[in-house]
Amino acid sequence: MNIIVCIKQVIDPEAPPSSFRIDAATNKVMMQGAPPVIDPYGEYAVEASLKIKATQGGKITTISLGDNLLREVVKKPLAMGADELVLLEDEVYIGGDSWSTAYALAMAIKKVGEYDLILCGREASDTNAGQTGPGISEILGVPCVTLARKIDVTDSTARVERVTADGYEVIDVPLPSVITVSNEIGEPRYPTIKGIMTAKKIEPVIWKPSDIGVEPFHVGDAGQRTRIARLYQPILEGECEFAEGESPEEAGANLALKLREAKVL
Amino acid sequence: MAEYKGVAVYCELTAGKLVPISAEGLGIGKKLADDLGQELSAVLVGSDISNLAQETVTYGADKVYLVDDPLLKDYQTDSYVAVMQKVLNQITPRILILGQTDVGRDLAPRLAFRLETTVTMDCVELAIDSQSKRLLQTKPVYGGNAQAVFTSDTDPQMVTIRTKAMTPLEPDASRQGEIINIEAGVEASAIRTRIVDRVMEEVAGIKIEDAEVVVAGGRGIGSPEGFGQLEELAKLLKGAVGASRPPCDNGWVPDTVQIGLTGKIIAPEIYIAVAISGSSQHLSGCSGSKNIIAINKDAEANIFRQARFGAVGDWKKVLPAFTEKIKELLAA
Ligand SMILES: Cc1cc2nc3c(=O)[nH]c(=O)nc-3n(C[C@H](O)[C@H](O)[C@H](O)COP(=O)(O)OP(=O)(O)OC[C@H]3O[C@@H](n4cnc5c(N)ncnc54)[C@H](O)[C@@H]3O)c2cc1C
Ligand SMILES: Nc1ncnc2c1ncn2[C@@H]1O[C@H](COP(=O)(O)O)[C@@H](O)[C@H]1O
Image (cartoon, rainbow over all chains, first blue to last red):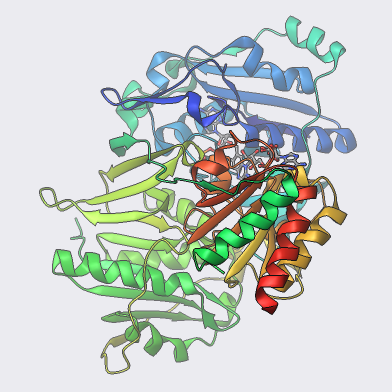
């Protein structure tokens, strides 16, 4: 079983909102005082791949596209148990949209060559798009199942439980295929000390656009079909009225009284 | 090259009915079509659905494109993408609107890549740029920490819209519309996936999407028993119980009651958040609530920046007293 997992380096979505800043001139985001992390849903996808490898054996290759990728960040999946790391690392890859990103990733996957399963996160924590997985499937011409909460692989089929609004559906999909992974798959495991040591020794393979047969005008900024006109922080208008009290119990009772006074209740 | 004209709305169905977001899509679609001085079309795909065409007309559609075929009874990516590709090649709309539902999340990106155009997912605001006449697509990014306004270079300009972000028109039975049938033209063999089962995780009582009052708990609740106390308050207020993601991940409550960016989007009259920190991803799902009330032991918690009323303290002490007082007030 050859599994490819797409992993993005992102600013930490769990960092306090107060450390989040936008530079209006460049429409770029900065996170002060919190280092980047691997995209949380990508991490769930790594966890899914490790669960499959545990029963099916095989090899897990992770691919990250970006620039200035921190090795301790993009190597985390290796420390968790993945086998190989491909980096599409170059400044021309950045500033792209779903099209240019999915296209470059699909071309890199073609170059890897052997794959049974391609896993992505259901959505990245920065774009909140959920387009890369379906996009890759469309470009490669393989089926795709989104929002997986469970994946069971037997021979050449994956049985996927897919999250729906009121439960889930069970879908059989032939391999190779793309599956996007949701958090219901289960908490990602922690890297072990042994894993961290192994990851240190693995050298990432770095591919430039020419290595994957992609023209520069197809990637990053130049390859995008979506433009960003404006990026801004919505203002939280909330002026919270606190219920006071000598004790928490009193505060609780006073909160009820306040709601009655304001005719909320 | 085809001329792209008009606005089309993909109207999602479930159990033989339009889902609410279809009317919301037609509502904003009508506004955009009027701004452009062009027509609004509804697209309906399914099996045995011709009775629904007129309903989309009452919500504003000038034309209804109907693809009715037994093979389309269930949403399956391969068949629906193929059918939608065919329909869109025929109507070539300038704008296509879908809902950010479990179907929209799957269908919209696949269809966009198939049509070699773009889609902006989860839009909360749509408008026509007065100069360029292109669609301004506003969507939250970074989990709601920021909003981005996108434009697209290609047609159709596709978007999905967030639940409850747009207002439907009042249905008007006197509206007239033209109904056009389109052959599905799909073969069963083209559908590569197979649906084996569909499992409902029903929650007893009122659904959180429909409730006027929602009492939600976060990681700080700590156990399923803790949620029992929230249930008591919800019952008293004839509401429903919801949660942030951690209680769902921990199995204290079913996944279907998760509120937020990747859960349910709700807009009740009263939202009571207990031991929830107020991450931007969570607030995405409840910021439309009329009154947010928060109980948290941390006075600096982000939830208090959105809340109208709050109490600081351990919920195990605050909540019973709060519930007791409400009981008293309601009885009086
Ligand atoms: C792409 C993406 C999508 C996501 N989608 C969602 C989503 O849809 N919904 C969602 O909820 N999350 C979502 N998350 C997760 C989100 O980032 C937060 O991790 C999550 O919302 C935190 O939940 P919480 O507030 O319950 O927990 P925490 O942030 O851990 O907060 C717990 C709170 O409880 C308080 N507390 C603890 N004990 C007590 C006590 N005894 N009395 C009173 N207060 C107490 C603490 O002060 C704290 O404020 C998403 C994340 C990503 C990256
Ligand atoms: N630059 C990238 N490098 C590697 N994987 C990515 C990249 N961008 C997106 N992905 C994958 O696609 C998923 C969804 O991203 P998005 O479509 O941006 O919401 C992520 O969770 C990743 O698995």
